[in-house]
Image (cartoon, rainbow, N blue to C red; front, side, top):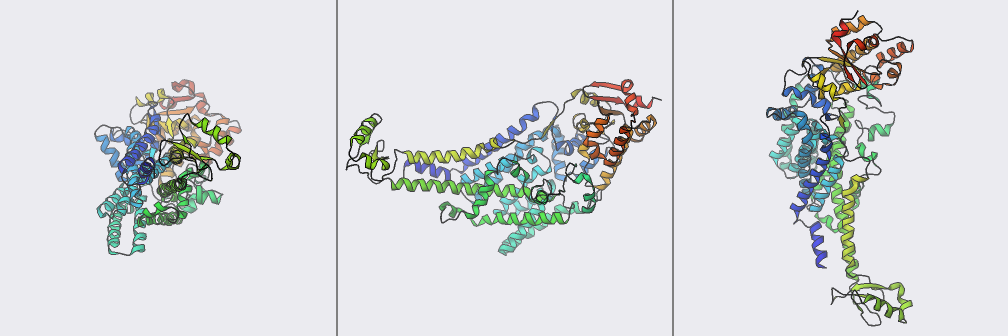
Length: 629
């Protein structure tokens, strides 16, 4: 075997360069993270979409006077996991604003995720190339979805769950207990997955060490989940399946779209209800780790020699798949008490396919390498051309071709013409007839180039997708509005049906009465209040009676009223789906009124009570409206 060939093959598959592949994996994760957060600093007013709900209220850590008597801020604070809340609060103590921390966290979480993913893969298949490929696949997949970039509780699942898997494979009792405890503090749903894996693993092996680990895991899981089980939310009860099916909010187009008339979408590709990550099927073609991971089942060690290095720990993959599927089905059965079923399957499948895909591609690369090597070995027999070897140097090739053409055996042997390297002169090459193979160091080069092509394709796969990285950042477009409201007292409240109202709590740090972004229908105690507020707001905004508007302002303590510039027209009421999201019944009634020619009383007070000139928006002072007769 050629020196170059030996070195490259060992470099790709031997366990020695583990540090190189590990640091390369971390570098890749850092690049993905940097690409992801660059847009976050493109403007002063930029926030990740989900952070608008899960992080805005944390401004209270720096200023406790913000959002007083605000049901929206209180609700999202109440549903935030304890560890997640404490983590952001800890950094607030040293002066780091939660929204700023939220922008940097994805890089840190991505690096931790990558480190543990690499280590898990090495435990299963101790070949560093596989470790690198698994982290490559996982990072690519994570940045095709807005989980990691959100830095919300679900973003913490990946580093903590992979940490659990690593310590589970290492049989580390302390590591397992700590990982489960942290998962319970940041993402409690992940604890159920951990416990299911421990149970399945014990049932499979039934040994004393496995029983001890199971007991430790169950104990840690019990104590970390106990507070959630005993805690009775002031916004309870959780909506039932029968009630959810009656609400348009849970059907396509709704704020919490879950159900579908298409069974395949509902069970397989639904973002909240489906078992498969939806981004896999939203791309031009399946991600490479998916079809490679599926191929792993058929990659026998009989044909793929490197498969012999796969350890017995690969049992983790089917155990994780079975555990995820079981809890996914249980979540459907107990809907919505375990929240979205997809939380128990889609995260797991991304990890499973990244690990399986890394192994499969490494086996395939090694298989192709060996095939080329065998072909090269078969071509090293000394060639015969009329019992003459023609050495070739750079300038001798034309002379050789001319001599071959004049040979009487040329035409009979033309179909079998090739070149090969002389064993006695490695820097020289020769043409041979009688079935000898082409070389000139080309087989090594072909093998090398083939491997590089595969690796480059895998690295550049995101460029073939529809959008990478997926960030879902929201950019505030009316800084003058945020600045004006931020200068007002911290206890003001803004009433608005405009889409821009969803940005006010984040960018102006002021309370709003209601917003479509915050109208989550899972806890009925909360959602009933939001629905009632939305009903009253819609009726007041389009009421022809100024007195009804004034009563509404006094009832809810409104200080400002934000309108879209066309917000009092029939066209706006007809086309604005957010009105129907907030309260479909009230929106339908108002639509009929407007069609019958009813003129909203607010239309007559805009000029006299407008306090800020903003393109496409109208900000009215409530005190001014109260003073009108």
